[in-house]
Picture (cartoon, one colour):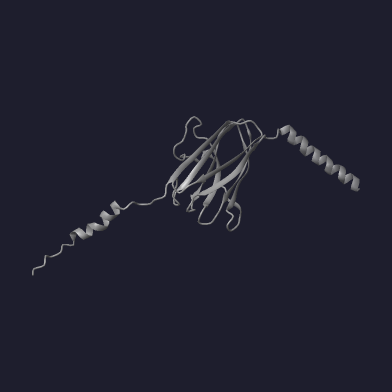
Length: 199
């Protein structure tokens, strides 16, 4: 019985063909929500939250969620927290930042491509954490001039059932310069009066 010689030429192309057929999982940036508060009057405080599912973003994707507002001027601060139930329900790498709105008239469909001038506060850092309790992020008070801004949250949904976060941001009126001078003068007078009494 004669056997046919086997050509290995087609075997060399097999790995390439398999790579082309098999779906490749790769990370991407996904904008999942945009909330607009319009022009806000001060003081302004609002809660924000989101629950994301694996159907919206894969664990390797980075989700972005935007909270937009316009203000005459003010002092912005925020705090965000994840709700962590281990492998079932969690978000990793939660962070937040404050941006100048690149185009207040446009509704974005993908994360913004930004210049350095657009980023007022870089991605926040963890300020408190505990095993099984998620983590807490904060943006310290930042003075804003009149204009439109975006408070942006990002992270990775790592729980098998999804993940959730929530928080609050505040915009307070900037103290007038005259009022601050009066306050410092009052503190100085109290200190001077206390020094005289001690003598």
